[in-house]
Image (tube, rainbow, N blue to C red):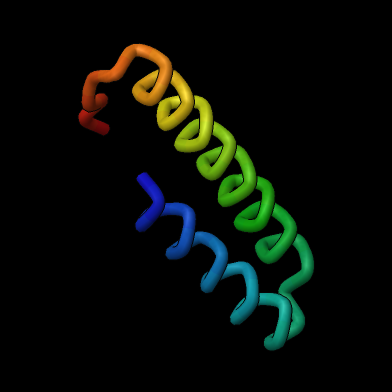
Length: 54
């Protein structure tokens, strides 16, 4: 899941550099959501003591 986050972050940076503000904002928002979902899953797996496969 973190690989998708990094992918959308790179797309957002490239789109921002090229002047595509709308696409950059959308990609950055998606990257932020995916990051927080991955963070929540990490916290759940740490609390439960089990591995959560994503």
